[in-house]
Image 1 (cartoon, rainbow, N blue to C red):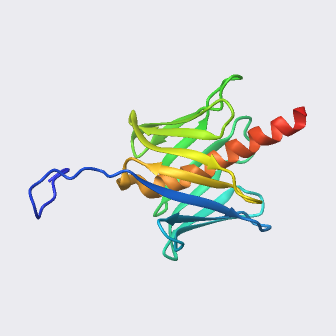
Image 2: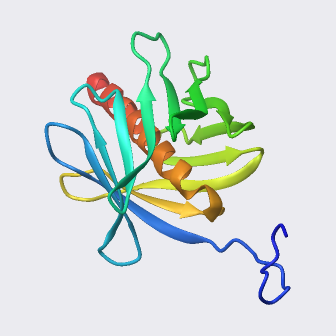
Length: 177
C-alpha cells in the first residue's frame, strides 16, 4: 500500500525526530543511542581494534559494522542477517572528508562539514539524517535528526562512521597545534 496508513486511508508521512548517541569510556568502544528519555534503544559495542561493531536493538543484534583492514582510505561494510546491505568508503579528496557508496541498492553519501562536526547522510539522493556533534564532558555525543524512520538502524550504524571521521579530524587538528 506504499505510504498509506491501512487503517485510515490517509497518506502516512515520515516524521522528523531526534536520537542521541553517547560514547562510553571503556577499553572497547561502546555507544548508547536514546530516543526521547533515558532508556537506551540501541547499544553498539566494538572490538578493541575498532574494526568490528555490533549494533543491538533491545538486546538483539540487528546489524554489524566492519571497518576493512589495511586500506589506504577508510572503507566500511554494514551487514544485516549475514548479508551486506551497505558499503561505504572515503572519496579521494584532500579537501573533504566525504564518503560514498551504496546502501540497499541506492547511492549513499556522507557529507561532513569542513571541521567534521556536522554530517548530512543521503541515501538515493534523499536526506536520511543530519548528525551533529554536541559538547559533553568527557565523552562524544551526537544528535541524529532523522528524516526517514524506515532506515533508522542504518542511520545508527552510519553515525559510528561519522564519529570515526570526527575523531580523525580532531586528532589532525591537535597534531597541528
